[in-house]
Image (cartoon, rainbow, N blue to C red; front, side):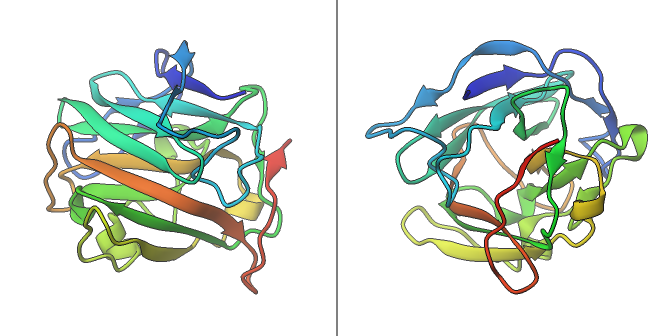
Length: 213
């Protein structure tokens, strides 16, 4: 099942530095994913496109919005509105009664390109910590956590992040995204980034197939 999901009811509060304070997320169906040109089956942004355990969630409660386009070998996230100055969401459990089983996972890796400022983009894994939510590797931009100094529309940059701790945590968002000025970056409507080869790995760099539990 592949749905675009909007946040309607409060599940927890993020406590980022400035514009993302008091951001609430939850589930609420708004429609199917808008597939990109040449779309294939499955989740094109994942190395294992056969995953069927995800919904794509867009946060509400003052947040801006993004459009997700699923193509055969990548996924594109485009800012549609800035809301209160930040945008958020990510890959959540298709069955909202479950959590992600990330046994053995210590790394998250992906290729990225686009027009967005890396200092304005946080990509991480998020637990179900309520007002004390934890993100792996941390609540910070990919400039800080991934060493990405710049992006462009044509060149893919490979990022590998240390997410040690997710295997024993209660994970609700397997690929959390936050776009904000909290880390001294900026973003605008129509800025976008594309992801391919999203993979969760063990300490040796072997792919781990995550599941629901």
